[in-house]
Length: 277
Image (cartoon, rainbow, N blue to C red; front, top):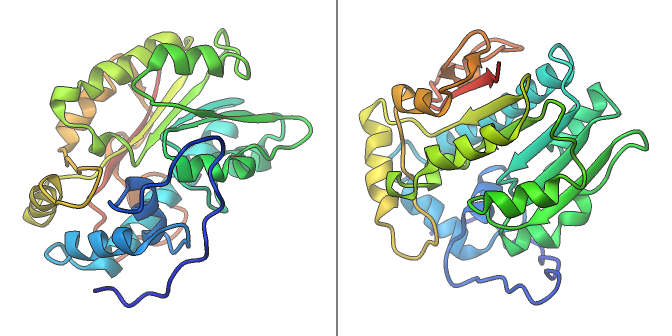
C-alpha cells in the first residue's frame, strides 16, 4: 500500500459530470506520477501494483517526467524554429505548470491552443487550461478524441485549419488497443490539417522484457478504467506515415533534442515529431 499523503480535495466538476473514485483512472494516475494532488487512493494503489514488477514507482516517475520534458521541448521547437502558432492537444490530462499553452505562448505569445479530454477531473480544472496571453487564445473541449468530427468542429472555433496546426498526442496512444484502430484515428486528424502541420507522438515502448511485463500486467489489472498497450518503435513509425520526421527521427524521449546530459537510466518511451508535407 502506498504511503503517500492524502491529496487535497478536488474541485467539483462542471455540470453533472461525476468523478468515479471506485476505479483508477488514467489522468489521475498520471497526475500522481508527476507529483500532483488530483488523485485518489485507488489511483495510487493501482500505480504501485502496476510498477511493482517493472522497476518501481520511482523509475516510473522519472520516465513520466522525461515524457513531459519531451513535450515541452517539442512545443518549444514548434513555436520557435518551426513557426507553428496553433496547437491541438488531444488527451490533455490534468493541468501542470508546463502545459502546452504555457510553453508555446512563452515562445510565441500569439499562439492558439485547444485542449481535449474526456476526464471529469480535467474538466474541473479547465479554467487553468483557458488561461492565455492577450495576443493568443486557449480553449478546452470536453469530449472523446475518438469522435474526431465533433472535436474538429469545435476546435475550428479557435483554430484556423487552413493554416498549420500541431497535433499533440503525448501519453495517450498506449491506452488504445489495436482493435480500437488508433492509427485510423490519428490519420483522420492528420487528414484534417493543412500542409506544414506537425504530429507530435510519444508512446510506452515494449522493446525490453521489463515493459513487456508491464503491459501484460496492466492490460489485465482489475480496478482501473484504462489499459496500457506498449508498442515498438517500428509500430509507432506507422502512425507517422505521410509525414516527414524531424531529426533525430524516432528516438527515446530523452534523446529528442536534449537540453542537458542524458540520464543513466533508459526511458524506453519512443517519440517523434513529423511534418505533413
